[in-house]
Image (cartoon, rainbow, N blue to C red; front, side, top):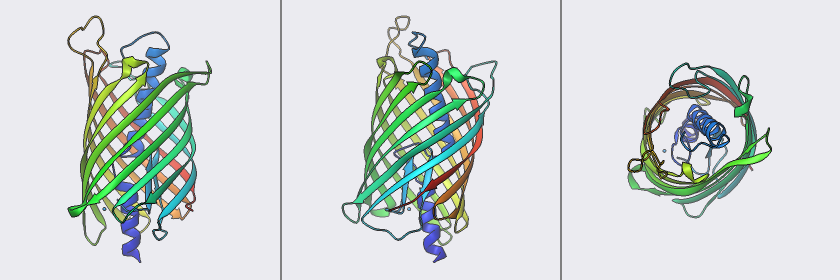
Length: 312
């Protein structure tokens, strides 16, 4: 029984693909998105082994379940996350820290079409609040759809689309929207009777946005390793390299467009004391090396999340 639990838990926590690969990484991505949109757009600027269906992923963590697999599932959830960031404004010098709080409610769902072909869909609503920089506060709608196909040798092909709509709670207007079709491939390996898990993969995203100045192509390579200390306690270390190529060409740079090269490393530990609650602690360090944009920055985040959920 413990062997089965390890396998379910490892799969739920350690699959990267359709979404950011860690709670910490997701926090960084949301922070970048929030900062850029609020700081630049509002001010008129233009530069700135995967088990089924025992697991599902969303942007702010992984939901874990030890229930037996079935053809379909629906999982409503609610979570509260808090973390400290070393660079709230993503400044290239004079960094200032802040505390960020995120409250999320939503659902994940899935259906197994065949033994190897699965589809998933979900939606959540998030409230993000900064302690010392309330101008960065946002309310966000996130929707996603994913289909994946399992191949021999533990390869998994995946494709889907993510959508995001950001509103300013102060101005009560929509400030940004994004449609993100993506595709990727991942391979995983297990060792030590399934307690040790290693994965790596590649993902391509094409992000259509409004304002259009933020449209871009993204290439991401990632890898990670995890270990199950107990049947309900797992740690993971992940590395990610992301390249962003913006479609917009500012007037001052008619030939070369903006690029962001983001390197990040993240560590998280997930504990599931009950079938309906998950507690996560995480930390992240990231470095953004930009081209044709004066926004190189370093970032460190650390925090935790508590999540309540139930799988039907």
